[in-house]
Length: 290
Image (cartoon, rainbow, N blue to C red):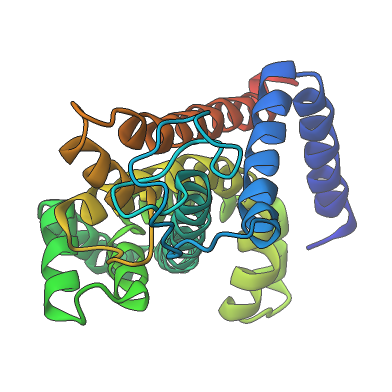
């Protein structure tokens, strides 16, 4: 990438950062996500209760009934706040890692297809079209069933293995536009090999759209992970995720509604904040806003 292109990329990121810092809603959403993530990481270590600790003296305790359990307990006497924070931590970990797997595959696939063009591009994108025609959740359910059921690694690979299709399409469109730019043609003219053009010139210029899409794919992964855990195909007891906590809460909704409301509230807050952050990043990287 020549100096002019580097200056343009730096200017784009600088302008995007300035617009993002001026978006109070996006910054507030980012702050809430960071706060919830830190709380989920640190608070369980400060509590005397583990996510699987049983308190036989406080079974199905409502919130506020005991100073030992701020948000109450479930039918087995397990602290609901600790289990919910453990579930948030596990759901975020699985969703973020699955999103990273999807983004890496999607970015490389789409960038190679867009840069190569011609028949290679056609075959690669036809495969994406075929996979797109298959029900997404159906594929994930099959993969989690064929692999070790309840395994966090299997769930992570299943989500990441089929979550890259939209990323590949987005990146391929951006790569088709980028390869017509002057600095790409100059790199080809001086004999820079295609892999070097891909890694040094194409991928760095795609980071903006990819970052925007990453904030949108993470909440999708959270929903898919929660749905699979709700169906019993995801995280298994005694581990907690937002999905199996909501499943337990739904079964006890009439007699112990707090078991449903607490994890559902955390899930809703995370989804709303990720979507607000994604909207803010999309506006920040929109060239029409410059």
